Image 1 (cartoon, rainbow, N blue to C red):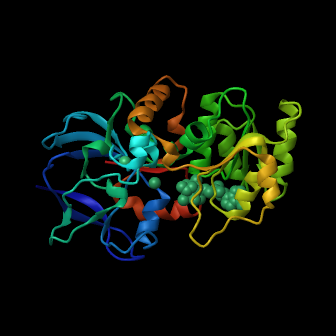
Image 2: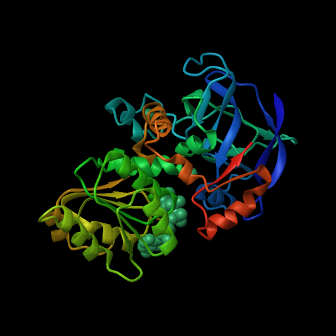
Image 3: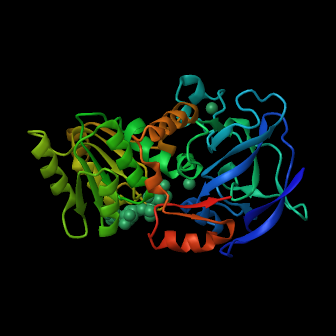
Length: 366
Ligand code: APR
Ligand code: ZN
Ligand code: ZN
């Protein structure tokens, strides 16, 4: 067991605090990771606000890179000294989804069995089973994916959550390729990552839609070929017009990624698709939202696929090393997502900036 500094959310809505926590030595199938970087994600704020569950105190942070310090018995995939990106979906390999080959739909994902605790022995709930706003954290070894140690930790660590969700929504779920068009509705961190993924895949045109002009500028810098301010322009008509300019007869985009998580933008995405096109919902709706009023004949008539994308439908061992290599080759600009590097004591301020939409990512560097 060892003691380290960490950021803890003690009670619903209360500001986070730096505390000393106890990190157990790794047991079977576990690893202790010395954290190098951890991005600040909306989900961390959600935990702090009590929006996910009431299992306070939380150890926040889940978008991280680090160095494996020690591993427990029976760990073969990673070893001390490995540079790793952490993931929150270590698949079980045993459930129906895993056996069927749909590993991204495994809902029996696992985390470390032992608990990290506060100095008084109170058990901590690590955000998404990670808890990486900490000098060190205990995770399941399957949550660690070894990648090129020469890569900049603050940039590639972002593949651990939001950036992977966006890139994967475009490539893994949407299946965009060269010669296909894509529109992305909502250009926050996730939407802009979908644009980066579309650019990487060679899609064209890449149409960014948002109600905030500064988000559209960011989207263009990362690879959007067209932008639409949907607070002033009907995005459905405009997406159809742009796609028809490139592909004669197109009635919309081959893939539309919805990265807001609202019924009205989902409806725009539905109608902005070309016939037989794919809609990918990556924005997370709230439980009270319902599918918008769309005549069933339109679902029938337009055909295609209505999908959602979980964590970009990623398989960490397949996707992380590949995307890190593409970053190292200069083909995927992950640096563009790092708006600022901050310390463990700056997380409340980072929540505030995130809330105002001022940053793509604030990244804690330890
Ligand atoms: N039309 C178009 N864009 C919109 C609209 C709208 N009606 N409403 C909001 N937006 C834009 C915002 O201006 C912002 O740029 O959607 C973007 C949302 O971005 P963020 O709040 O930064 O969220 P992000 O981290 O990108 O996540 C997007 O995916 O993972 C989920 O929970 C997350 O639901 C959220 C979504
Ligand atoms: Zn996240
Ligand atoms: Zn499984």
